[in-house]
Length: 110
Image (cartoon, rainbow, N blue to C red; front, side, top):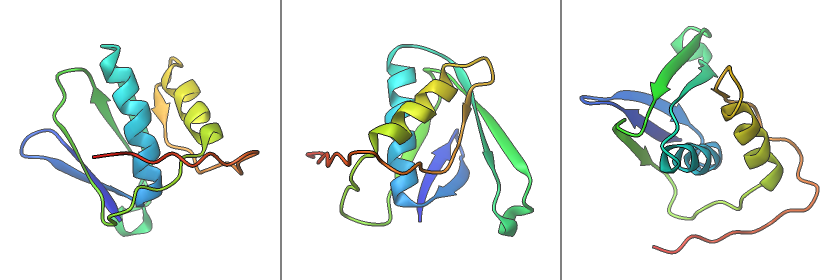
């Protein structure tokens, strides 16, 4: 499980590494464009099964921490679905991964 730390001292939000990588791409794209937005997700049963939301803007302190050492492949359809949501009036809502129509392997260099 990867974690997204938000703010200082930091709210810890957990996602699996694959989901976190897709979120990082979308969030980074929005913030690089200096766009502010709300990010909403459904909490796990361990956290009460409710919904949570945070406000993200270019001054937000974010830290993406991955459990695994390998970057996952990227599902272009998932990026597009998340980006479409992020660009809506309701902001970025985390959705589960759709089936890819054509997988694209993207490797990130350090």
